[in-house]
Length: 308
Ligand code: NCD
Image 1 (cartoon, rainbow, N blue to C red):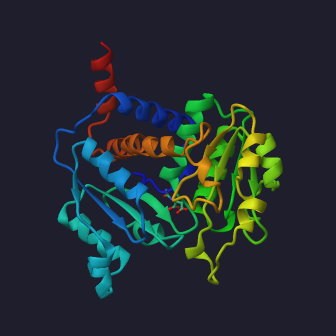
Image 2: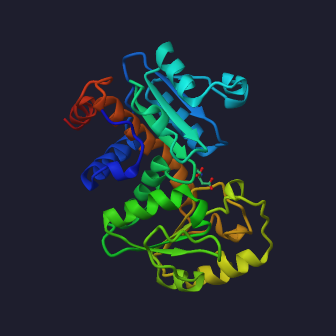
């Protein structure tokens, strides 16, 4: 049985099926009849990811267990492994985990017999964000083939850049990176281009926040960052007519993007958040089905019943 750890573990066909299920959830509810408990173990700050997991779980009729790392036994020295093991013993049916370690799942994946969904691993992986980003692009263009997608910002410290660059390539898009000096990650084998080149050529521009919390030395940014490496109003005007802007958020307005562009016509930033709920519903039910916790074919049966 698979924990949901990386977008790389999915085939293109599986990704497309998740998109289909997510789209289905947008218009149709599925309330699971059995009592199922979900625990969201977030050891790093989160607004969107944690809340959208909670909304996704509640929409599915799951009971959401309360956990806050700052008031949990983590403060008494309990390890991640013992925290997850505890929720398993208490009867949780599913856990989501966000942790600052790039490889936290190595501590837990072979010893936990309930499904784990990766809600963010250090600067290494963010598969559910990746899928909601892919869904947002797919809704726009209905195919990844021939699309030019630029990921721009603090590539070196971003788990979103890591997950998205690989997934985009697997789906058939051409991936380019754009970063200020020092923010490049040459372990990612994609060409670097300037922001001026990026806005001229891209179909989708994925902006990233500067991940100050992951910098080895404390860092600040002055207004020249936006001018040199960010999306200014002048650069936005250079974008192709159909090109879209994405950002996983949180946004630092006036740093990686001019504040006025956050809600501009080509921005899909709030659409991404909305998609986050539906793709997480799809990931949760798919995982529960794979683990036999939810009956296999429940979703298919519901789809068939509704369309007949
Ligand atoms: C991202 C994250 O946590 O990696 N945010 C998110 O999950 N929506 C990006 C970020 O923090 O900049």
